[in-house]
Amino acid sequence: MKKSSTNVKRERVAEVRRDTKETQLAVRVNLDGKGVFAGSVGVPFFEHMLDLFTRHALVDLELKGKGDLQIDAHHTVEDVGIVLGQAVRQALGDRAGIERYGEAYVPMEESLARCVLDLCNRPYFRYNVSIPKAKVGEFDVELVEEFLRAFAFNAGITMHVELFYGSNLHHILEAVFKAVGRAFGKAIQCNSRIEGVLSTKGKL
Image (cartoon, rainbow, N blue to C red):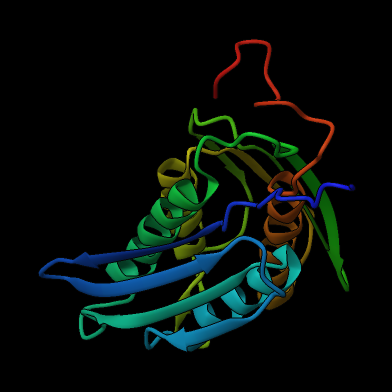
């Protein structure tokens, strides 16, 4: 008699809350989703960028909460990076079977950005994106660096982000978020040929 398969894949889903005097946030991430973003934190352009990241990473992200936007968006944007990173760390578990590395070049009209990352559990962040300290709508573009740093350090990612060229700030940031999303989406993919973690150490 042929035996039935009982191979069950672990669900890579996590939820994290963060409550401080500055922000009250909740996030749910599904690393095996379809690229769906839902929710709001009151920063429309940032939410647009998260939607791009989510879609191109093919993960599902639910985000809700609020921050002290009467001051500015800094605490809210940075804390979203913290909770998203913590949720990703939980969802990855021991990181067994994943590709671990991801890279992506993304053009957006006149702009070209690249992200190369390693889900090695040893956080490092380099952001070589030279743009003026300005706003897109009401959003301070320098907050992108704060978000990505918080995300990388809390998720345990070595991440290098670079802008080769570009002039339109919206296009530049869109290329950056898409590149990060696509690189992340590659790195979290499971590969049945990988036994344990993809490291000679045997642990990440």
